[in-house]
Length: 113
Length: 113
Image 1 (spheres, rainbow over the protein chains, first blue to last red):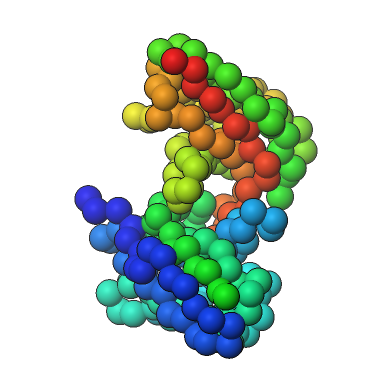
Image 2 (image 1 turned 135 degrees about the vertical axis):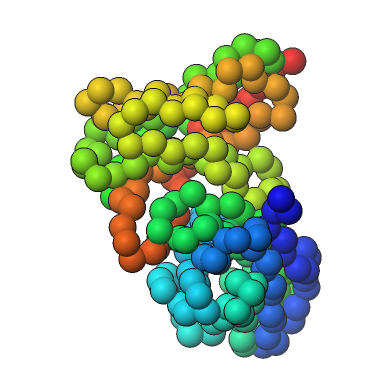
């Protein structure tokens, strides 16, 4: 079974721009969670989607948004990028999202200049 | 969620069993123990989880003490590819969906050739 895929793998953007990241979960997995990982803050939860609905949300500003499509694929968007948004953005999928057995993708490395 | 304590680093010889301890003395009855690892520059990888019984899968074994205040992750025949940071997490599994993993500092396991 193919793992979680994320595109693009690397991205360089300028402050003020917006960015959209994509995640394809493992086939049959209906829950997708997004995380931001930085050396200083570690792994931080952004949000979780299940059946096209945001079910849980972390403590991030409204510039961070996401959506999930009917095939469970998910996208996250960051508007008005700031230098502090430079991070590894990770997507994780699970069958139902009702436990913490999550399978992570390789991440998208975003650099904001 | 219960707090976990892990040694910051450990060494293990290649081919030997790696035993990684985790203390979670404040664990409550409905909290599960999860183990993840993260190899440098890759996304986290789910390893195993359990509630009270010992668990084994193709990657590792999880031994939880009878009082559930500590656990040990066992990699039976460590290889160089097992060098990674290992995270022990304690979480309640609820019906409302997973509200995100958080990692502590973990144990940096170094497999020596």
